[in-house]
Image (cartoon, rainbow, N blue to C red; front, side, top):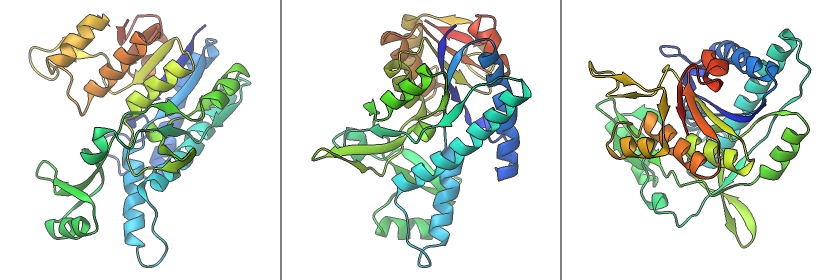
Length: 309
């Protein structure tokens, strides 16, 4: 049986076309945790990670709307807040699914901090869009407040923040202990809360860490055998969404890197997952898998999804 890091895609929590109400998020998460329960029933040890894009965006809108009425919060606190609320939702949903399947296993959500380098070039070149879409007038006001704002594909203006590379998971040791005790762990929500070391102490950093890279790093640090990316597509594909689309069952490291270099996997979608998969396997992981949540058991057996090894 394998130790698996399973990275939940956004569709596992908010489906396309939904508003993202808490009722919708809980319903979707409960459904997604049913598939994870199948992995656990099969005897696998699982550590779950997840994104937080829409959720941290909601929080930022709430913070902005309350400005002048209550103290504002920096971005790293917004990330922590989303990590806590989503960890609660995922853990509770999985606990309920395990009870439904008569599986007696503990579940714990771990608030996770991830070390970054404040000298990372990404810190001076914000590229990660966060939060709401703004009018040009509001964008100008945000720029006066020191934020970086860009026009986003004709849909309005958005704030962009740095996205530095993750260096080390602060809570790795306790996550390892929980895993060794048989606990199912939820960790690295939203890529983790970015922190830096300053005179030997940790300090929050206003940035957003790529959730796929953070998941890969966590998988390496806890010595997981498998890294799974749960997405909306059945398989990784070349020439995606064109008449020439070719679905891929397997990719070698060399092939994955070649297709990345050729631009087959866009930066905003499959690119980060393939890049993170390559890093995981290069650093001792047995294999990475990309699949839909409902096919996790089949994908682990090589009967669905795409395997990178």
